[in-house]
Length: 421
Image 1 (tube, rainbow, N blue to C red):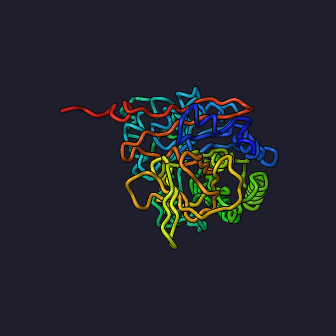
Image 2 (image 1 turned 30 degrees about the vertical axis):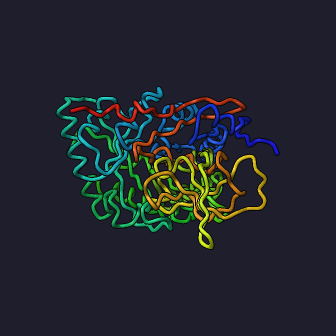
Image 3 (image 1 turned 120 degrees about the vertical axis):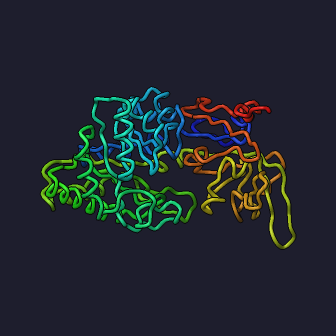
């Protein structure tokens, strides 16, 4: 049986060189999905793809997507700092978040961030105060996030478009918000943003969202004279974690979005062709990534359960314990026959630290390598130092070559902020 390879690189050899757990990301897969999203320009020319950094925020990925022509969403000064470290121009960044702090706003303004997506009227006032304190003169480009009140069928923790969401301005308050914007000379208001959730398979809610945003924009224009030049519909398209998942094709999705946008604009006789912005995150990187663990051993409980323990878990992938997320996996370099049902247990001091439940795998032994698929998104971004765990390394693979892009943390890294008394 031939050894498992990704992008021409032997996975077992990568693990031997860089250790486990190990994040591996296939660059060509990222570029392919990026190209699929950018194809929207063939159907709606005035469009922009803005990568949602929260899925995976590291310097090397920003460099790749910047070359592909992407813009970027950031939700903290840390993500923005990383973006700038990658050499990306600040004007390509959109700053999101429901509670941007004063230091974050100050950092964004001092570094000439492209757009601030304002989440609420209190934040608008705060930006004004920081702007005034810095004695700036260049206008600040802003959008406003609205609550679309659209139901997307996804996990309640990643559902963001419903009325009781912590994010955004409610529709009945948007007009007052825009009128408040007009009182401040430093703001250049360009449009509306909304996001309905994540891991969404049904594209119909996006059609409803586009109609709502276009209707809102034309209504605000009639009442205030301000015409939105940008409409941002967020991201959220799901990916295939397991066989039962059935996500839409990205190319089919962008064609539908472009058609829906054109129809909505024509219906209300919109005066211009506004910029259409999409914000994919998970769908860009999730399927490009895997995580490889070393098996520490197994535990059989007669007539009940078989545990397979690995050298990582909830600290490098908190999604199963947080959302009940499901994955597929394989034992490397073993025939996929005589399968046995396992619960894959992490090494952390929580009974709920189970990466996979009742997954069928070849009989495992100590030292085997377990590869979990579709871990490119949110695994590293949500990772932690729980139990003073050292975060794994990450390598990018492409055309038979591997590049270390994230070093494995050391014991010294774990205590670098500790102070003795």
